[in-house]
Image (cartoon, rainbow, N blue to C red; front, side):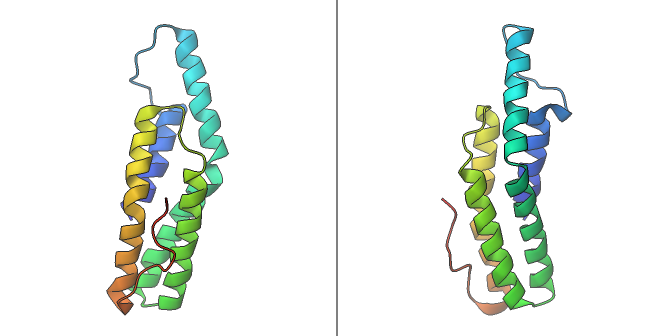
Length: 128
């Protein structure tokens, strides 16, 4: 479940909330790269927020044995992950790689939460 939080944090890092460590040949290149990443982060704000909310709700639903809620949260997480993947790649290769790795693990994590109570997983399967 931490993957969604990691993904959101990576977007904040890439969007310039912390200094970039990438070396560029000029300030103009760095500025244009940072602007591209910020634009991408703004474009994907809703699916990233939706993914974080769905994963948080799935965790709560699993803990309280609310399996109907968990099923719905699983589907919401899947839909948000698909929306985010539809905006890939990011303007930054490292960010793209990290997000893709997190999204690749997400369906398994949500399914494990779901199986904890009912022996089933998210019926929609992994996001692609």
